[in-house]
Length: 285
Image (cartoon, rainbow, N blue to C red; front, side, top):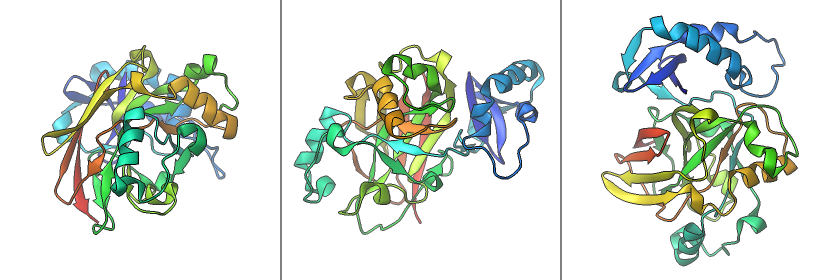
């Protein structure tokens, strides 16, 4: 099932080139009072929401995908987690390019550990990327994004995929510089997620997905998730050894070689096997 959030927080079921408006399925999500439980309420109640979507879909009004504004399918994650240098090809290019490493030693993911991006950086593809510090290099980094389904800690690698609600395309945007990685990657709009959530049952082999990113028609990044250094189960095991993860938490799994700068007016297009295609515009903030 492909589930999107569109326009003014409407809930959609994506079928082909159409979005079925199934917003009424959200009526089964329990209302909460302050303090709200941690996590994204849609993902915490995803099984029941899916049942309602199935019931509503035959009579739901349809819109063309091209006519809706796609937002991040996850509204309220407690964490957006990043995996640095998780493709060997990117590690090699980072070591060779002073515009990436800024004189700092490029370490392995074992040495770096994971990092956090502010959840306030999260946007959908239709919102686009608003560049800050346009006098500096602002790079695209395309990644598979893993969405956590339930509250989980210290889960084993063998059980890790049982805690996955689904997958989406992620863009881990970054402004290059000497500051801490989390600081430079947490700018508003620098975590793009979309174009929708594909539920885990639709993707049997998340560790073998082709993907590519182009800028203004020029292919920049092209790889397969089989090239991950820490695969998805290992990333989840690693993350939960440090953090408790909650429904809707996002793990961006790392980017391959080909990262590069974008400028005001550029258009990034990302295509991901089994997930889909998203187009993201770039503008000056």
